[in-house]
Picture 1 (tube, each protein chain N blue to C red):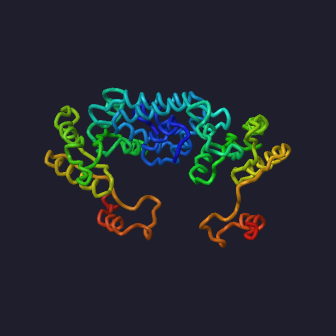
Picture 2 (spheres, chains in turn blue, brown; picture 1 turned 90 degrees about the horizontal axis):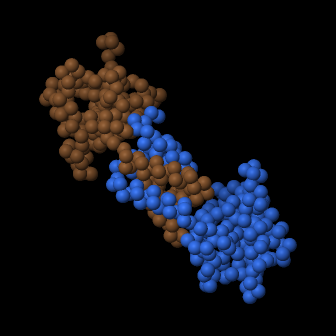
Amino acid sequence: MNFPSKLIEDAVTEISRLPGIGKKTALRLALHLLKQNEVHTEALTLALTRMRSEIQYCKTCHNISDAEECSICKSHRRDATLICVVEDIRDVLAIENTNQFLGKYHVLGGVISPIQGIGPEELKIESLLNRIDTVLIDSPIQEVILALSATMEGDTTSFYLAKKLKEKGIKVSTIARGIPVGGELEFTDEVTLGRSILTRINYSSD
Amino acid sequence: MNFPSKLIEDAVTEISRLPGIGKKTALRLALHLLKQNEVHTEALTLALTRMRSEIQYCKTCHNISDAEECSICKSHRRDATLICVVEDIRDVLAIENTNQFLGKYHVLGGVISPIQGIGPEELKIESLLNRIDTVLIDSPIQEVILALSATMEGDTTSFYLAKKLKEKGIKVSTIARGIPVGGELEFTDEVTLGRSILTRINYSSD
């Protein structure tokens, strides 16, 4: 594309570096900003600049935060004996939206992926193990829930973590894999269906 | 969504004001910027700020430009007797990419749309008529090509412009509507197919 202006070309180039945004979409966004009042562009750039330069990561769980410790880690109403391990901050938001989990989190910052060159030392695994070791005497960690994606990388990470955590004598669980609520049996893939039979839930034990 | 940080919440709110970007995509983009080096965010915000504050519009054709007159209007290799009227700058880029047009442009900045409250005075129509009146004696405008969308608003604008321009004794044409190249007859809608028969091109007159 030949742009009539270097300024718009630069803006389109920068916008199209964002994931999932191509040159055409970037141009549409740039032209949208040009049509709007200048204050919109100022608000957007200020919010991005402040976010990038001022955001902090919680020293305990590595979730993003406005302070040294995030609001979840600081809260006394959350069960400190229960830790849910997730891949990134989007997973924290997703789980928080369910209102089903009242413990604390630990954000790994990714999953083990040899193809992408991500090993255990690139993730916040050491930090998780230290956290379990150095926890206060009055609230030792009872259970670690692994809430990672049901992909090969997620499963690898889960197995790795489960081994490390069991060595410390901690109860480790993983979120259930099965048929999504509202899903129909005949349209479920064989692997999921097979797993959901193997890991069936016993009604009588409730 | 409850965000763990006001900074990321502000960034997501501002990003999701852009057209076609919802809260989830905005969060994905914000987290992407957080993962990248800070220079990427700086480059993006600088490009947007500069684009919004420094961009100019060509005084002749209203295309965006880095100077008072755009490169197309300035060029002596373009046919100044031929003006192509388009809705916005994206259309200029699209036509330039075809390499089929060597005249100059006139960007209306929209089309007549009573529903959206856009009348002829909101567009650069007066400016187009003045441009035709005040053109130099050695290159009077010979033909105006209307290249507007084949929508009701586009057609309304075309009829309005054609009437005004014919009063000035100028040849007015519109880009052909018909079956797109590669399109199959049986999948073409009736209106397009009907029009393409009515406005058929006579081989023998070539």
